Image (tube, rainbow, N blue to C red; front, side, top):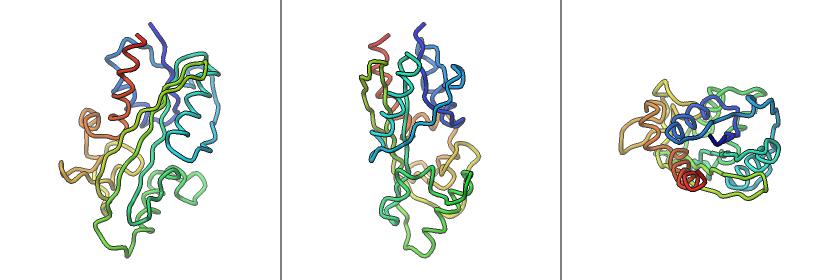
Length: 197
């Protein structure tokens, strides 16, 4: 069975990738399974560049096909921020997801509503020879002031999807796999994975 290295240490992302890829005849492995402890600097100017940096680096180090993503929340009222810096939005060292959500609401305080936003994701699939393919996904919604839901991670509790009247954190993993930015991008990558299998 072919191994696929999922280039993340984020537990929330791990759960989503496993759920999305579980029906493929692949052995999913993570950097920690292989004793790889590399922090890839996200120096790219786009989600696509950052995802590619992670996938290519981890693929070369491991000798395996590697899948990586870079994701951001873009809020219109903040001119697209936090965007590429979504994971590093809070100035607090060792910031938690709750710290980042708090920072987001602080920045939005007093700005006119609705606070239109979108989650953007780029997924990169890389071979050890450096060949890389990129797949994108996006979902639109609004930022709300009251946290809702117990699932998900990051900004999910504040990201409301109007057409289903739920926040991302109110979705089960199965529902999230229908609507999320990451699911949309990964499903595009799956088509390429199937060809490789």
